[in-house]
Length: 312
Image (cartoon, rainbow, N blue to C red; front, top):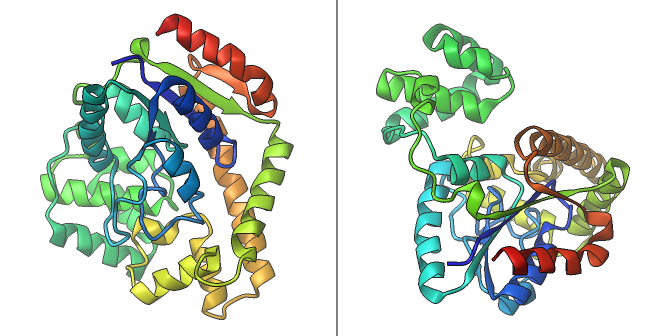
């Protein structure tokens, strides 16, 4: 198989557009590396590629998981293993695109071999999170697993739940499990890695405008329609899909807890904060990737094409 291409960047940075251009140039298959775009119920708010784009070139691992599932990095890596084999057999090039740094870290460095945790234990800690809140859960974690408690912020609900279920289910700290990684599926020496950058003020404008467009459309095919459907499903509030960007804020509007303009403004703020964290991750963990100023992407495309053609 020719060298896979990896595209990372903050939300709304134009990753999917670049992936399309590369897939058409290099007979590629686009593979999702975004933890929200895996959910079938979350198309608009996750900015999943359009039906038209997905018909232009093959796309894999988009909208293939029910929101009722707490899809994990390990599950994604297992799915990717099969997808890579399919792409190799087809003689095509894999093009990974997404903003979930942990997915790329697992892809290139392997994943800790944590045993499967009993569902009763997992459900218990999800229920406790709803009942007690993240700060109280963090205090419990501090007593049970001080190693992980020291690494996690008090508001990081999902990772606190994960740490508690692992210490309960295995008797061993998640920190210790993380120190024993599986063999990575790909080596960075054998891929093309691109990280998209933007002037932060311009990126924030793109984020705000895109979210306004998501809620402007009326009916089911809108951000509001998606959140309404999620609430009707009755998904557990602790599930990842219910904490996806825009979902908590629009849920509060639909429940009558705040006005729509307030919900939109808050969702935009949370998305900008998320983008800031993504950019920080890029700077710290992807310093060896080729940095691309996405504001000049049209001008850069011929250079990118040439580099990949030369390197294979």
